[in-house]
Length: 199
Image (cartoon, rainbow, N blue to C red; front, top):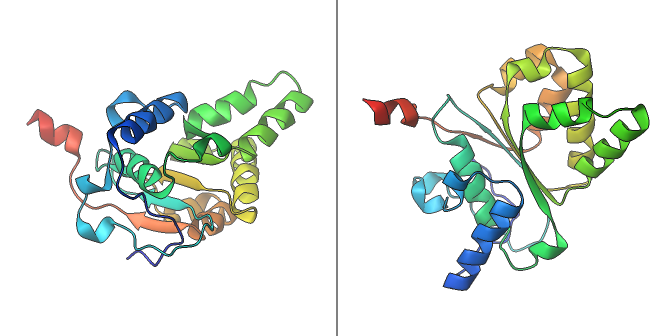
């Protein structure tokens, strides 16, 4: 069950604001199929309550493949961080594995640290699909932990989706699981929508 969160609600939006929001989401790498995502696509109990402060908060969203985690994550991004003012708070969308690979591909330790510094400082970071294989080796776990730990310590908006539960992640790395547990944890229940549509 979700606890009270500290986010500013997206109010009534004009059509131009909605269009601008779609352009913004495209510009930060959100896949086209999720540009129109909204919390109206989900049951009432999955719509977070609101407190008026500007404090940042993050989300850790879990569930089986195809249940709607990425859809929900983008809907939360739309709702929690309205388009107005986003120019001052740039964001980025990436699959976790791709983000780790970009860090690994750095040609030198200096370049890797530079890329990690930039990733840690992204205004709003949506990291999609944290998988077991992202946590298989010490090097990947260390990079992911350093990124996550910095963002949690600095209260920087971070949304992470995964098919893994916190218990699953703790078996691989308790420090990462602990950090993820400090975010607002949401478990989506239901069937695999992609498979359901094919039946």
